[in-house]
Image (tube, rainbow, N blue to C red; front, top):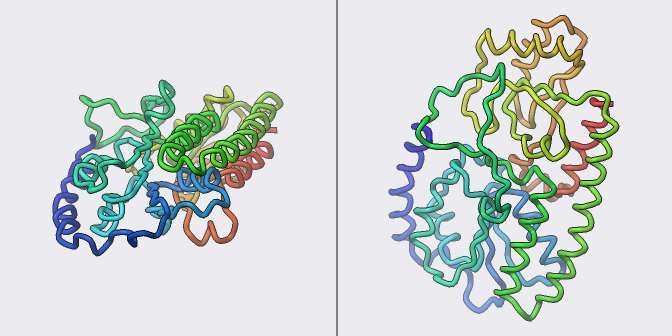
Length: 323
């Protein structure tokens, strides 16, 4: 774990103590008859509500509904208590969620079902990759492997995770099991259809390389479809400033591959992308955004954002750029 994240995790101790003091104040209403499900990120939340469908059998809490990035989130005392007695807890399981182990040690619901995305995707977890031109990590502990957390950006991983969510929902609520399974089957068909659209996009693409003047959380996605990439930072990097060497190397890649686009992710500053373009021979290159689904807000959800709609928006952007 990086030294920054170790410090952040240490701050959880007083939070846990505070949570224990406020006790039952944060518990769900007794006898409401609904499952209580807590999700740490948007994709988990959206998959779960798709599987539950219209049954009205569960209250789903999305912890990062303010739009805070998973890499910066630390739970409040209220969040800890919400997790403590929920019926199902869904989380990624990467380094950014190192606080979860402590949170689960304090749980009051001993029958809680837990979905850990890293376990649900079986052997599909990837180590962080340091590509040519990428900025060196200043805080990385070389003694510990660091895994790419962004498993939700693979539609194929999404199928595996949704299966796990559905199985555990059925264990908790056998009365609605047939509905959950039917909803899963219908949703899986949609995931497969979008996966096929991505495959077709990649097969037809004239350009097979993406260049990011930003963090790169899309490794699971590009490897599903045989695309390559270069980027300023790894997907979980805490760095925000790129060195002259990084800018120069990425500008060189922009020219070498005759690319006309530099990508950034949502809510990101485009200063690095602009520097790459101005340092290259491709001064007419444009900047495009891809959404990593890490900062989806409650307002976005109210306005219709779903996992499938956001992944489809990324597909349309890639079609436009890679054609």
